Length: 268
Image (cartoon, rainbow, N blue to C red; front, side, top):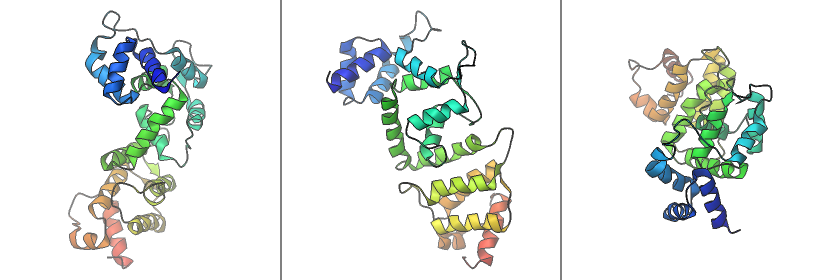
């Protein structure tokens, strides 16, 4: 079976449309199944299940894949993937939980808001169904597209950064332990696998980490997490920070402290 025939077969399995319809959408989108599916659902998805609006029929292989990672002790009518199952899924996708930003991208894709939360069957199945993915290989290909976007789209990069805070927050905690926050700042801003799409002074980031350690800051609030990224973007050089910083602006107090720390260290 040729590659085009395989893509047509996958499209038909996912949409239950005719082969001719699948070919039309795929040709119009240069045989990119994800783009073709998005156009198909935009134009025709509203009436696919008009007769049975509550029923959703997912490809058998996708359902079986979910069962591969689902907790066997969970209720048969409410199957979920627990953290342990997600670890196996992440590994099979070729990702690393500890040091790969694509794990955060995957979490956002699946609406996995906190690592301690289970993934429901509907979360898993509907997400991958809408992306036209039923096999691990297809999922890897789609994630590769998001990986490219992460390092070329500044808005998306910041969106993933902001999403990270709640994802890595411990259960019932409201603030992030500083050592964990530091590790993720390093991954995002100091040790990315590719150049990031926003201008940030790496030395200023290192000074921020040193400031937190020297001043023994134990935890990071959500406001601090979000605003420090805005701070780095607003002042990508020490020169701009020196000439344009407004201490009366609505920065969190910890950032004002950081500014004073940089003065004391002779950076500004």
